[in-house]
Length: 317
Image (tube, rainbow, N blue to C red):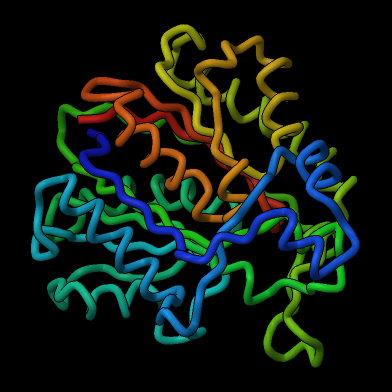
């Protein structure tokens, strides 16, 4: 018993913020940012255009449902991976249920595994679907990082952008497992954002060197574990979709694993790090570009605050 991905969707805000734009805010330059991260631009929500976390989640979800060819009434599980929802409660998933008119017995909740959240969500949905009322799950990864950026911290604020991505999972007894792996390493100093009761602004804080060391350890590790659990080699994977945190981190993992770089190309140059939105936005981009199609095997891996990491192998319908 398992799941396949039968539809994807994504949404990014209309406002494009280039590295030159960032240089007007903090002491930096296009060369400094692009050579260290691979980022050239990112998207920020525009309040005047009515863009919010909620609208991004809704738009990405609607596009995924349309691609899957199903209606909201057929969804049994609705999960939103995020740590930047417009409200602590109600959850973004409950608001999405209302926006799309899903049935009231749809299982809806948010989960927070930061940048690993979407991959976490895929496995959670896989586990819940056998007991759900309907055999489809809608999993969204979305974050609006521009709302939690300290724009005086030039080493951090240039890295992040806003965006949402979504996937529809179909559950059947003859579908394969995701072969998911995951982990956590409690750490409240390397990468964190204070909560509402902390008495300080909820800006995202990051120790770049510590996160780089962590990421270059766990990205290759969890990728290898997924391959081993599935009993396949990297050659059997059609596309690798890695969390787009920093091109140098991805390049390190690709080299260490001996992967074909053409199977691992990313989109960080025009999205920045969108946290939980990162993996599903890239997934939707390659699906819509025709780089993968029915029967393709996609290995996804992400890491983030927590510290957390997760990997999964999914097949497209």
